[in-house]
Image (tube, rainbow, N blue to C red; front, side, top):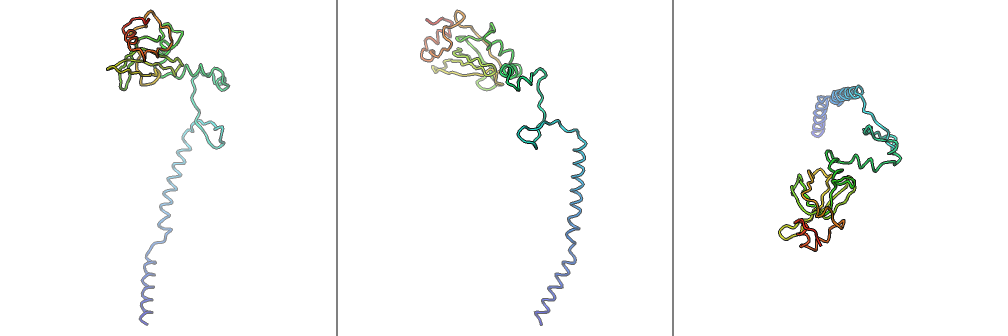
Length: 208
């Protein structure tokens, strides 16, 4: 009898708690209404905004890409077929402000182009900010042109390769032209094993 009374008291107590708890729908519906209203307002703003021009992706029907902006003078039809692609890239791949320097110093047709054996000073934005040496090699490849300078510091030979089209290279100065205007060889790698010839060339004397 006592156990039955305890059981009845437990049922009546829990039924009172369940009766006092609000229904789940009354708790969730206001939040759902607010989320729906926010979603509808965002959709309306997106629909009223002007859509960005897109082009279909050739490898997928569902993907869309923004239209790329090409220069006005670009012969797009010819470039798509591969006609004149390399000359176009050599004209347009230069860094801002570097086109004039690249044409005057690294074009073989320019009368002021660099010659091996010259004394060159390079100004960089990062360390070493200034480097001076003998031009022992030059590679003319349009925007990918580069050159190598060699100098001797504290009885140690130091070589550095520079890419003039890189953003870190600020200026390339020609300090002195090679003796008698030009050298016999296109690469002066033999200076690595001849310190005395390196000193003579740096002093402005022609190697024998």
